[in-house]
Image (cartoon, rainbow, N blue to C red; front, side, top):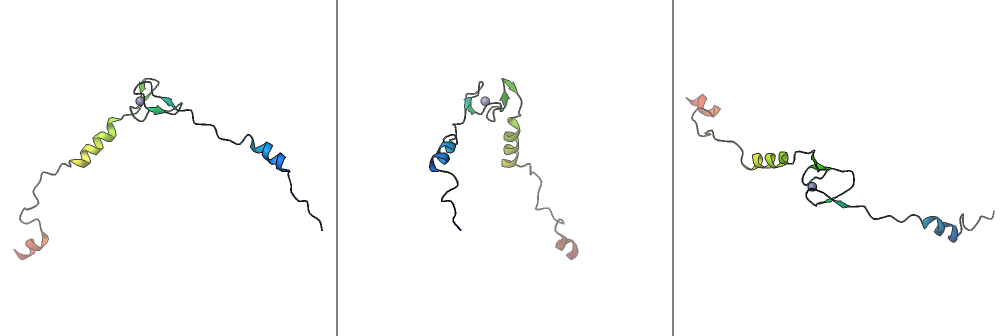
Length: 89
Ligand SMILES: [Zn+2]
């Protein structure tokens, strides 16, 4: 049984694909800190959107500081804290 050589001609396919190219992303600049920024998004660098503060950017800094210097000022060398020592005495 004979079958057609191709469903669409090369010309038909190429005309369709003429509109498939991607356009470059429209990257703007933050009005506050001039960092590159996509439209309609809050700036991750300074946490502002349209000049208003919408994200607490100090939150991550606080967490990092807490991780770096944990509050640990009690003594681990106390006698009686080890269960083995309590049984012996
Ligand atoms: Zn910014």
